[in-house]
Every structure is written in C-alpha cells, then in structure tokens.
Image 1 (tube, rainbow, N blue to C red):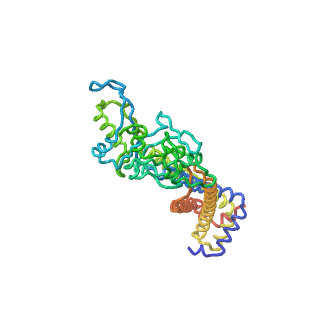
Image 2 (image 1 turned 90 degrees about the vertical axis):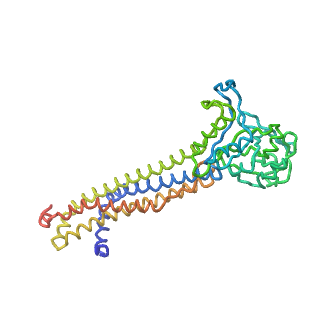
Image 3 (image 1 turned 120 degrees about the vertical axis):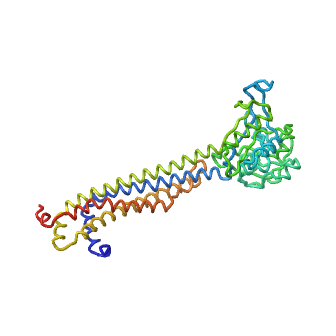
Length: 422
C-alpha cells in the first residue's frame, strides 16, 4: 500500500496518538499485558521443564524399582505372610522371559528399606552412612557426578575388591575438604575392614533417590561383607525405549510369583515404584501448563485487541469533522479505511512488542535468580520464538480484522453530514 510510504500518514497517526495519550496508553496495556503473560508464563513453564530435566539428567526415567515383601494369600500349601526374597539368578530369568527389558541393575542397601546404616571411620573421625552394594550397570540407572576418581567397574566385581565410592558429605566428614584433599587411594574403615577410596560423587539438592551421606562398594564385596550370598535388596529394571514400562512391571511380578509359588492374585508379595509412570505424569502436567499459558495469553491478547477497536470507534466519532473534510477534499474511501486500519496495527504491534520485551526481561531476571539454585526445579527459562512470532502475527491479523469495524464506520461518513457536525 502506498499509504505506508507517505510521510503524512505517519504524522497523522503520531498526532492522533499524541492527542489521546492516556486513552492510547490504557488501550495498549491490554494487548501488552496479554503478550507479557504469554511470553513470561510460556518461558516459566519451559524453565520448569528444563529444571526437572536437569534434576533427572543422567537418570533412567523409563525404569521401575522392585523389591520383595511378603505374601498375603496362602498358595500351594504355603501359608500367608511368607517372606519373599530376590536373587541374582532372577535377573537372567527375567531378561530371557521379558524381551522388553533393556537391562537390570541389582542393588543391596544398608541404611534404607528399614535397615540401619553402617559406620565408616578414618583417623578417629566416624559416622553412620548408607552402604550400597552395586554393579557398574547401576551407574546407568543414575549417573553419578564424580568430583574425584571413578565408579565401580567389572574388575572390581570379579576381584571382590575392597574399594569404595563415597558421597560428598562422607568426604567432607572424613577428609580435609577445605584444603581440597585428594582422597583417591586413601583408606577408610567399614565394619573393621579397610576400603580404598576410588571416587567421590555429588548429588544435587533435592537429588531424588540418592544422597551424599552414602557410599557404594562392589556387589560381590557387599555380599561377602554382610554374608548375603546371592540375595538382592531390590532390582532397578529399565525398559527399552519403545516399551511400555507398566506392562514390564506387571510381567516381572507375574514371573517372580510363578517361580516363587505365589498366588497370581497376591498383590503384596513384591512391591514396586514405577518411575516411568510418575515421570509421564510430570511431563503431562508441564505440557498442560504450556497449553494453559497459550490459551490464557491468547484470550488476554484478544481482549486487548477488542479494546483497541472500541477506542478507535470513539476516535472515529471524535474525528468525524476531520474525516469529512478529507473526503470533501477528494480523499478516497480506501485511503480513509487504510488510515484507520494502520492506526489499529500500529497500536497493536507497539503494545505487543513492549509486552514481549517485558516478558523477556522478566525471564532474564528469573534465570539470574535461579541459575545456581539446585534445590528449585527451574532452569534456563526460554521461549520458542516461532511461537512468539506466530502469536504476534495472529495479533496483527486480529488488529486488522477488529480495525475494520471503526474503519468501515469512517468510510460511511458522508462529507456533508460530517461538516454539519458540531
């Protein structure tokens, strides 16, 4: 449109807006607030999603944790209340029977599941910590953030080595952390047996199923130390990427009931926690938040655009005489219409950009405030600019559509009637 390149057009828009400063400002607040809400809430929802992804980073979220309990139904001559037990041999059996399983990590723990921890000491310093017997595959379930050294490997398992990986809190209690003392290769005592420290790991605040007041030793060493043979405390079972983990959970329990002569109807023999199901609920909640944000932001923007139309209707009424003079001097109806439409777009676009910049500024502040806060699941709040530009395009389109109402009213003004207006 040639009207876009005429200096007079922009001067008229400027003078029109300047002469109605308060009205224009209040009108722009509606659209600006809508865009501000849209950007800030969408970014905040993404920040929460990033925060939870960071919290669960290195963690196999498509997994279940299963442990033995006791029966609650008599079966095949066995009484009610019979204690169940998991064994290492169950792992191969389950992997053969259920091909949807990717891998299984067996662990045994002291200091959890109702058992007391054990004392670790060094140079007169001692305290009680959670002790876990683990395989190298356990590090795939939950990747340890190592500050020093390495994690348990296959050679440690095969050699039943007296090696230990300790949490950061254990390290701080037993070593001179202020001087950044290197603990690798040094010994600590567990149940009167000396263990060589091969690694130190850190768990972030709110870090889920682990804590820094714990230590890991080879499963084979753990079994000998506590005389447990091939008994297993619990199984962490990870499904293949395309597998339904809930189906795996049910199949695992049924197979274990079969080999342990437990009633298929018994719901208490084996307990489990389906992390995949809980994680899916979480991601569904975050997706719902983003959808709600889009709906709320869009409706707020629409309300603001409608307010612009109402204000322009008032403006057209106030400028009736001016428009009549322009028509009398030969202005075409399309020129009058385009002038009003352009004013609508300018107000809409300007207020939308201000709201966008305000939302981005708020997200920057939130990012700085939460950058190093691991206890709060919020990280790097960002917005998908394609979504923002789409919203901006829709907003401008709505501004044009809504602007047609006052524009058409301006076109219908007859010069003679306009000039008679007091």
